[in-house]
Length: 507
Picture 1 (cartoon, rainbow, N blue to C red):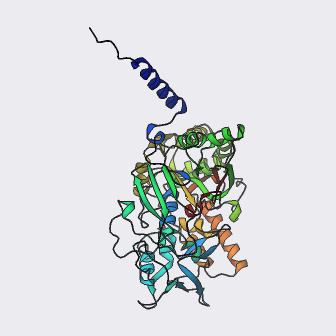
Picture 2 (tube, rainbow, N blue to C red):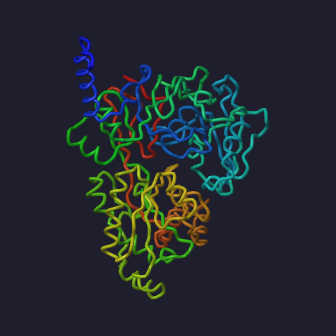
Picture 3 (cartoon, rainbow, N blue to C red):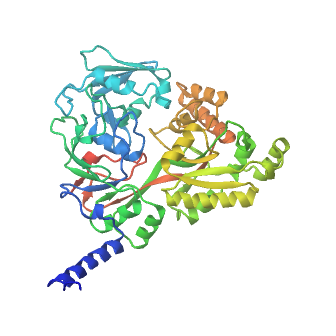
């Protein structure tokens, strides 16, 4: 026989059941429901950064954290123009090939040591071995003299946008003693904020760095709450536990508009969703006519209208319209292109199946992929199959060229079409398709140093050639949409989707 429950037992059980029901109804996971410690400042929802090493960082959530911990040579103001940061001033030579940056002599690392020109040079030089457009542009970077605060950056071609690119926190100076990046609290930065505490995949508590004396001082402490699910971030915002959500799914935007939730802000963003096409290694996609047919028959407008609820802009070019990209599709007949390809490749019914790889953790993009694959099958009679996998596997397939079509994206580093077009230069890190075109590379080379009128024509010619070769299929251009609680200042949507954490504060 079981013993009788103690007095109050049933009441305690009922209370626990009520709490459990509330948690389930809210759709919140327990790790976010009970925050360790009380946040002393605004709470910003973010995906968990995979790294805080400036050499490895590439995702927005990583760049935003690095931007708080480190001070690059310049920063971007509200109009996305470079303004002094670690560098007090800069100048360019008459031929556009040499830039000089005068560093702030008062700049200090968080451990109190001075930030030197040699360390700034080392931070930039870490990237010279990569395949980024900047790595392909830069000649060796050096301090004028080891004991001075002047840095010289030499280029292979003129680049008037260089200060804006060097505002990216990945080009922050390198601390000589920094070897490990696994413990964020042990990372020695030189920026306006430092990590006061953290819990892996849960949160980062940032506080003003005591030794920072630059022009971008922190307004106060900020907590970054790591939430990979945007839906969960929205629920926490509605529950008053999060003050800023910097990325929103289209379904959530539609519902927030419908219910007139305060704090929904939006602006055009300079980014493009796309599918890369593997152009090397044989197969149907090695034929430009097949690639062009897929591009022209892409049901992007329906996908944006039906599945993204109009919260994006259909894309027919890599470059967003705000930077001069195309706004209408070309008028070729995709069926005629495929019939011409069949003359060389044989009947399309005998072609191998084409696989589209999409990250499984992005349900909105999976739904779009299902819609597009179905439309291509019906319109073109091609055998396309959707494959989903973790984002790490999808990226590994991209890098190894073991895919046919693969979900991707490009976002601007600076306000110029070249930031997109350089990504598909032969061997560039953003290419990853196996496509290479010497004529396209030559057009980009001619852009460097061209007079403004000629430059615009060369950029347009390069964009046209890239579209004609179709190593990718543009899907839509992004919008920067945020939830910012009324009473929170210092954060707003921007074309480059920047978030200056040091500026966020409660009014």
